[in-house]
Image (cartoon, rainbow, N blue to C red; front, top):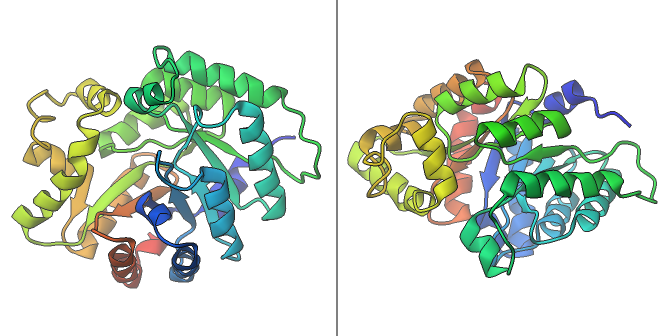
Length: 302
């Protein structure tokens, strides 16, 4: 059964919302938040999976059940957390139950997280390929109008190639616009390209960059992200101490809503089909406030 990628792009919309912190809130708050994201006009709500947070597929079901037409995507479901049969069957169950509104974003995560679960991270691309083979071999026994679409968390050429060959596209995280240009060239014209974009609604340069560095410091300790930035031409010095001003400004869009909109448009002009914004705030409640401001500035129709 072939997935209509063009139709999937339309359903996802051009602008979505990304959050990992949402999973730390109560189910009641999450239902209200998802419903508001839908009312504000965003096309897709992306949720992360952390070692201490809600399981990705159960989490997605909670959000899908609270909305009517919003797409929900995992950004990402860690392949080391569940085997391929569970991932395939769970994703297809959600696809059938919620009228094709679920997208399964898969990723290999990071060596420290994987090692803590007793797995070997040495060959992540091979591990993902083997996982996709096992998913393809899974025979789903329930009714299924259309299989759940798959996207890969892909940064560098080999994983982007795999995304283009075996799935409906790629979901890069923690990337500047120049990565979107490179990713589109590797993927080709048809697969979905859905980068994440961190945003800070603050016009004070020092304060905005301080907020950005507080979030960036975690990712700049992970080799996957640092190596990707080095491949793009950034230096070790740029990646040190929470990031140089230039790197902070490339990774995090900050300022007035119009500056955020300009960055989203830059990704779209560079080849993205969908950009999921992540407001960098202390709490999901504050993030919702920022989403209201951005929606009022007409970001969702970008």
